[in-house]
Structure formats: C-alpha cells, structure tokens
Length: 136
Image 1: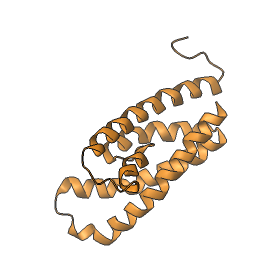
Image 2: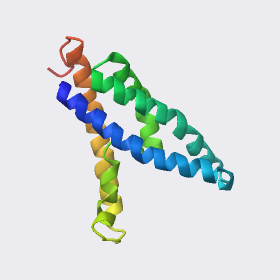
Image 3: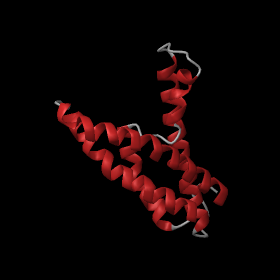
Image 4: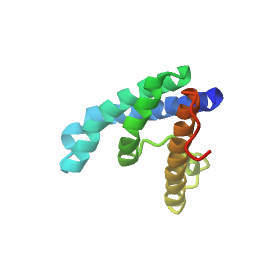
C-alpha cells in the first residue's frame, strides 16, 4: 500500500506542476474574468493548490493528514478539473494530433481514474489503520 500511496503522491506532484502554471495565468489574467463562475473557479484554485501540496506530502509519508486532505479536496478536484490523471488529456497534443475527438474521451478516462483513486485511497486508509476494508 505504501507504494500505491507514493504513486498517488507522485501524481499529485504532477498536478502541482500543472496547477502552478494555471495559477500564474490566473494571477495575471484575473481582472479579465467577468463570469462569476470563472471568478469562483479562479479563487478556489489557491486553497485547492495548498490542499494538493499537503495531501501529496501526507500521502508520501503515509500520514493521516494526507488522507484527510485528499478527502477534502476530492469534490473540488472534480469541479476544477484538477484530476490525478489529467495530464493524459495533453497526450494528443504531444503527438501533434490536434483533433478534438480525443479530449472528451480522455477526460472521461481521467474522471473514472479519479474515482478509482478515491476507492483505492479509502482501502489504503483502512489498511493503514489496521481495520478490515468495508467489502471484505
């Protein structure tokens, strides 16, 4: 389980790298946001960034605060598209395939992956506490 948690922490580090680029754009272009939902998304990115950093550190060390941080950030990840496997949506561009048909498919894969990660995180949390998982 510790290897799995470290893999999740590594995926969070990738998310942190991409979020840093997004936060830089948000800071430089915040005055251009006119729609309230865009402003809300921009404002929420900052606390989610902190939660992802805390969660990555906690999961890599196997600490309880890593799990709690992930549980708190999970709904915000879905709303803000800060997905653990979100980098795979950039693969078509890396292969110079700019066809728009791949993005919706890969985004769905990312959402499914995020729910699988939530399930595995819950199981790991139970195992780290020495309890039996719910479905065993």
